[in-house]
Length: 499
Ligand code: NAD
Image 1 (cartoon, rainbow, N blue to C red):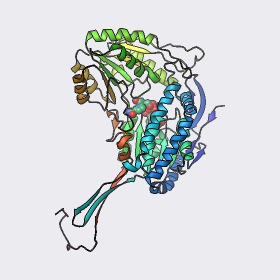
Image 2 (cartoon, protein in one colour):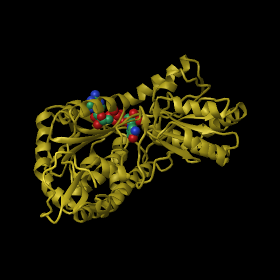
Image 3 (spheres, rainbow, N blue to C red):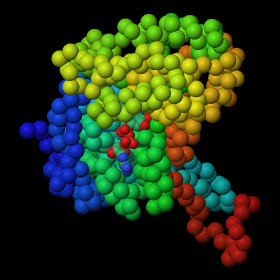
Image 4 (cartoon, rainbow, N blue to C red):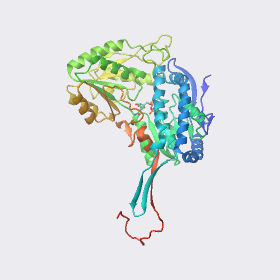
């Protein structure tokens, strides 16, 4: 009998009451290891009610004290990282080292969010008019929600929780139903760190829970990360309900290889970013764009060699470069994408289908797959694959490569490898993509900047974390005051102006 997971509402674990459950797999063995309750509207309602009750006192707590709760959380999560990484790996399938890295990237945003007293400072103008001072303050929104994907079950919730909690909001987290244990553990650690019960609630579920969140007027903002069609749905629905929304979607990230690039360095970058975490990263590089035939031929030859040496195996084995995909359904979908690439005429240089990992025969493993001569009208180029599949789409010139990345409907990340500063500068300025790397394959910005894709990769006008995180999770109030109060100018029937 598999374990039964819970929700976390009002500081307590709550068993599911809807009677609906989802399976949580161990992707490395293919076994069901737990059942996750899928919340109904009443359960979401209970979570929101708890949050509504808890938020005012938390919002009134001064930012420095709120930051101290985050500091305590950092201490607790640091102590627990190895155990957390095992939990994460057991449900997601990424290697232990990668799970530790993910937790660390989440921690960095909490560290940044400790700066809340600074980020929530207002402005003050003395004497904006006769006896008039103007100042602004940043206040919490109230109760906000986050809906997060399976591929970063620790990092992405932490990206949202840092600025949202530090700004004084209460939070409803609806994590992915594929790997819900990390978010539950994060909620426990926050409670232990001193976050008042009810300020952070975790509601597990699927579309029913999401719709309950979207249609509840007590939720003031929704932050989403996941696939593009759902991002669009949530953005449209949330904003139509008058909520603030930032919704991040899928990706197709290109890496431009200029003829002057160091090919071994490029191969390291492509192999790590294309196949790491079985390609289940929104910032994975999925398209290599070599410029010129010579570069393309040389790159293809180097990559074939490197792909052959990749070790796919149990994510608990330190020797594995990457582990299984998250579910059997994900594996079947990617196998279908590979078949479509073949039938559309791309050259299959390495085929990962049919891989069997000894001792893990039922695991959701897929070997590394490499295509060459991919054209931009092929389905494998147009759609996100989200698996260990790397495409080579050749470009004749730098301008053609730049146009390819810029014209792709997605605009999350892009990278260029070159030794020429002029080209790099031209590329970073002109490319129509939100996050750009120069000789860096996965340009996920550090916590003090902000993460945000463009075009079909991001809906809404503010990025995640960094100063944008605080802007998203707080609202500005501006006060115009006149002292001494005795100043009299008589009744005025025109709009006040500064004179
Ligand atoms: P997903 O869109 O299937 O699920 C994301 C969340 O939405 C989950 O919590 C899920 O329960 C919920 N959801 C799913 N279907 C829904 C529906 N019909 N109505 C309402 N809610 C629904 O995404 P996923 O498979 O968990 O994650 C992978 C995707 O996320 C990829 O497309 C990847 O590129 C993207 N991603 C993007 C970023 C980014 O920052 N741009 C980061 C990580 C992942």
